[in-house]
Length: 363
Ligand SMILES: O=P(O)(O)O[C@@H]1[C@@H](OP(=O)(O)O)[C@H](OP(=O)(O)O)[C@H](O)[C@H](OP(=O)(O)O)[C@H]1OP(=O)(O)O
Ligand SMILES: Nc1ncnc2c1ncn2[C@@H]1O[C@H](COP(=O)(O)OP(=O)(O)O)[C@@H](O)[C@H]1O
Ligand SMILES: [Mg+2]
Ligand SMILES: [Mg+2]
Image 1 (cartoon, rainbow, N blue to C red):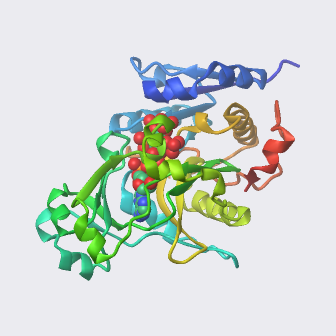
Image 2 (cartoon, rainbow, N blue to C red):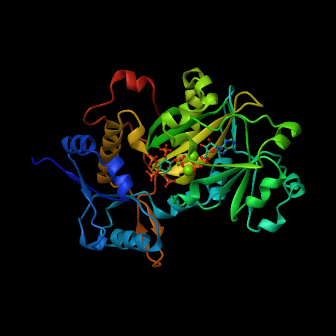
């Protein structure tokens, strides 16, 4: 019998395509019967394929409509992920709201989000306003919209009232929590979870005296993605050793990942976790990103190939999910987690090596 092959069409911005679609991934997927095919953005999606799965990270209503149209024409196509589910992550309030909906039961660690408030009008922000919202200096000002633009990553760490004049609403004002300058990035790919450590902002001595002495604010962008050379210039980072930071308990991360998958209905995301130095084993989710930089994950080719194989084969067995499209009709889309993960998945090509498995968790 001829081998069943699957076609996965991908629609990614050029930078994302360059980092994610590596020859090693394309070849490994091919060996597993999965062809990764670039979607031509100069042509309507509806004229391409047919694909068994559409993998995408693009923004805008036009693209969303094309996906809906495609799902209507090809009711068996898996859209990874559903645009509605992704949209929830494009606003830093609704993004973290999901995390507050989770019930995580763990004896050795607790979980939450930092205190935060949204500001639409710069005029209302004053030191007493912050106080009324339960916030104290320092605070982080984050653009409300997280749409992948450079602007959406531009943040301010505000040390005192003088810094408040620099705010550009709409923004989220969030308490800055000392966390030993380490963030835990937890990558989720369907059932697979991988936690890595990254350098973060240094702790701040938040006494009134010290905050008064500091510049009023500090602007920064994508701290955890700065390359090592940039950081090595800094005395603070020279002194710290990332290896010393203890990872959060695995079972705890597993529960959060599973909870977020259910609540967001997403397959492909990561979340940033910090350990609140004031409380010990209390962890806070500060950011959730759709389809993050998976190529930075060890052995990502294998993880992704396993994932594609798994969802495509499950889909073959009648994976069903409906949602209302903007056209008003029912559109069948892959809504993450429905039915997925309930069966034991057989590992396809190149299963993870033993030592890699031991450092990762499956939810
Ligand atoms: O480009 P990379 O590999 O640094 O990945 C970015 C992510 O880095 P991470 O994997 O978390 O270290 C990055 O994560 P952070 O927001 O920096 O925590 C975002 O997911 C970013 O996407 P977007 O700009 O928010 O749409 C991701 O950017 P895109 O590749 O999706 O443009
Ligand atoms: N509440 C917080 N307390 C302390 N540091 C934070 C907090 N929120 C964000 N940071 C730091 O700022 C960085 C960027 O914030 P994040 O919300 O992850 O935005 P982005 O989407 O640009 O990654 C984080 O990686 C972390 O270093
Ligand atoms: Mg982040
Ligand atoms: Mg982010």
